[in-house]
Length: 631
Image (tube, rainbow, N blue to C red):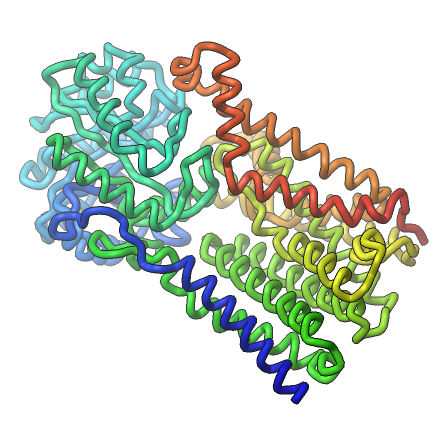
């Protein structure tokens, strides 16, 4: 009878997890279907995993051909950003599949003048050789936004191309730069403007983007009547960090694209959607969010359909299955016989605790793996998963102790302490990275789900198990006040391992980007690579170095650092909004601007979760008090 009750509660927890996951992934209405399931134009970069223009590793002709065959059923036109290197045969392939092209030339600053010449020459050659395929050309993409060229330098390239081709010539940048540089507007044959509500200095929720697009299109039209306008980039990310009310998600991307098509059809706008495929190489520059704007994943699978309802995560049943198996393994494999002595409420609480940790672990690992684009990042994902599983098992064990079905073990307390402190080190690293490069990095609250949920769960189990001293419950998570031996040796080991890993990660960054071109002097290149490790979102070396330090520090000091990081991050996120050029123009009054920016910060759910996570991580450290590990 007791075994049947245990199995019933396990089944109940599994069903509840499945129900919650199912409800979060119900097919959703994403707006009016795209007519014929085919868009007018889409940005096309053929790079796959391990490809990158930064390292000049380009896809094969066969891979490009496969991409164009796929896109022929989804779009009428493709927009490219470069003309040389591995893309010289692209117009001939596009002709094969009946695709038109808006051909681009990628140009940069004076340090890449030779590459600029190659691009301009290749663009002119392609435009003249394939006038039936290439209908328009674009010289440069956001080169003024990046500050790589002065307007006069850009104009010389534009004029040179205009004299050499018959197609209309343009330059592409965010809409506001055409307002700032009328000399560029005067020279081009048509405007190519980028309207990206997610990236605006004042971001918008997805349901308010349509009017924003119309408004900014009209600004260009009113300022420069007569010339054609191409909305050269407009889109929405499917995953990544939230910016104010702008939330990346699969459903929101589908809503935006469908809304954009409706706006274009209603107003007669000429649009190009960014972009065809997710671009892993962009994660080096713009984090996960920069790599996640595609209609297709890096594996060439649709991110969402252009017609019909949309599911946020079609693979949710697999996640539920794995979480269910993990729950059964944790409960039945280790505690089945002991649980039969519990009454109904403690039994349900323990099984629910195991189910919650299992579900969080599976979702965290799956999301991290999906946004890992190379072996270094996959190592990071597996490291976090391994740490989470180990800590989760120890937290479950502590839950069993609180319910009096397991005996205390000093050895396990020590491991719980060091694993928890490793997650604290991870939180420190992510917090400083977010402060230094917050525009692009993911808000990392999912990485600390296991210690945070475990801490809160143990407080509940302690109350159910009759533990009156909640501080004692919290202190137990980090091994109580007892000293542990060998801490200095462990710190030295972590320091050595961290230093070796930082050196390896620095080397990988140096060879995995355009650093040899950007930093021809080795010392400069080494310094730039090293500094990048401070803000790279998926590295582990610095985490080990931080862990080597913090296991030697007083717990209450660590708690204070975590707590003080909360207002610091609020100030940093608010300040990032306030200094935006367009944000200042829209809100010239300082008080109004501060209020608006602060609202964007504190209503950012991802940020609120992260700040809450830092506070929860501080609780066990604070409960231990001023204790310090020693020999």
